[in-house]
Length: 63
Image 1 (cartoon, rainbow, N blue to C red):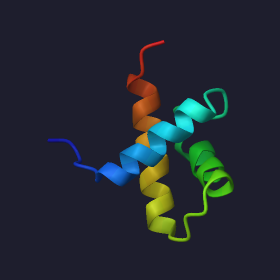
Image 2 (cartoon, helix red, strand yellow):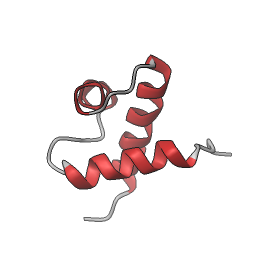
Image 3 (cartoon, helix red, strand yellow):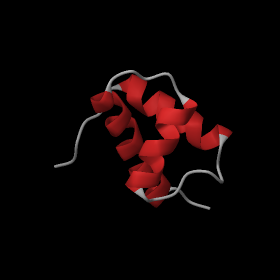
C-alpha cells in the first residue's frame, strides 16, 4: 500500500514542478533545498513531505 498524501501537498508539488521543470529531479535532498528556497513553508515536516512527493512525481512523470 502506498502513502495517501493530502491534496495541498500534491497541489504545491505539482505547481512547483510545472513552474520550474529543470530545477527539480528525482533526488530528494536536492528537492528539499529547492522547496525551502521557492516556498514559504515554515514546517520542516511539511517541506519534507512536499519534496518527497516531488521526487515521486518526477520519477513517474512521462516525458
